[in-house]
Amino acid sequence: MSDNIAIKVDGVNKSFKLPHEKVNSIKSAVVNFYKRKRTFEKQEVLNDISFEIKKGEFFGIVGRNGSGKSTLLKLLAGIYEPDSGQIHINGKLTPFIELGVGFSPELTGRENVFLNGALLGFSRREMDAKYEDIVKFAELERFMDQKLKNYSSGMQVRLAFSIAIRAKSDILLIDEVLAVGDAAFQTKCFDYFYALKKTSTTVIFVSHDRTSLERFCERGVLINDGEMLEYGDISKVLKSYSSIVLNELDKADTNSNKDQSLTKATPVHAEIRNTMVIDSSSKQKRKFSFGEDIIVSFDIRALTNLSNPVIGVTIWQKNVNKAIYATNTLIEGINKTGIFKKGETIKFSSKLPKLLNDGEYFVEPAIANEAATVQYDQVDKASTFFVNGSNNPHSIIANFGSINIKKEIKNV
Image (cartoon, rainbow, N blue to C red; front, side, top):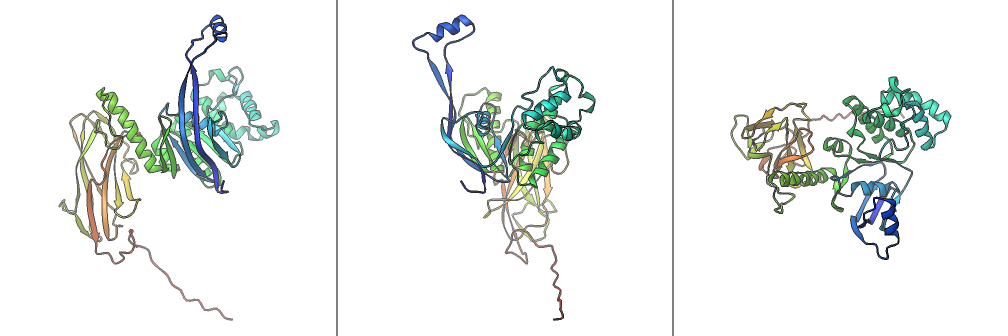
């Protein structure tokens, strides 16, 4: 394995045996034990999973509940062994899975700090030095002498997370730690993640929060029904994930057993219509001069009642497999876009920055739910436009900087 690879998963398969005989008493356990033939059902959980995680990388693992994601995490953590295939770990790995395992509900928060620290390999002296920082980060100063059984689930996770991040490790496996906790605690977690990105620590980040995954991860993998459906750029992974989730919502809403496409699912909650590229006088155009106002507009038909949907647009350059520009209401700080009833139309428009040099560009409008975790509709290449007339057509982005050349004469 290359020195710049932190984790390599190579052709991993995992299955479990589910016994058909029901055991609900000592008698049934004894009877089943002496049966000549016990029958099992084989449950295939992961099938031929392969990917690599680079050192110092924030890597996302995405998947619905029951997709095999939790099994993959436990394989990476060494809790399970694969049936076949190999997992190579290059460095010390600390798993943040099921935070709080080892806590005793009958002990106080203070006692559990030292107990959990000992499980992580810290001495009493080391935990004495870390104690104040742990309590401050968890924001539990007033509760440390209370028994843990009186803590809420959120308080327990905050305390466990605050202890766990003190462990020195090359690789961190972080599983949904932001699912519990208020905005202030999540902000602390984000600050901690930003600090990690500045180090050489490798982080495997597992979350259903699309915004967090996009914020921290560059690459990831999508697991669905035990299969690896997408691997690579996190935006592609999340796009495929949204299609899967939306497809499940479609099935639930229509109560239909019809086979539906993951990438071309019929909109159920909202539909994007009438995508246009217009100039400052609202005239629809396809060809713009460099520096001219370019405005993207489209309508959204609410097919169900919508609450504060996230609406945005992405601009792609024809010959580049990378988004050139993207914005949405969440990025722009518009958290309350409104309440829309079924049948109402939402008008959206956005003026593009005057940064695009000569070329052909594609417009991709999208609308998602309030949490930006599920895309209601997204239209690839909904419209196209051209830009020409730039004095620097050799790059995609226009040049607005300045160059300074200074002659310096040194006496020899």
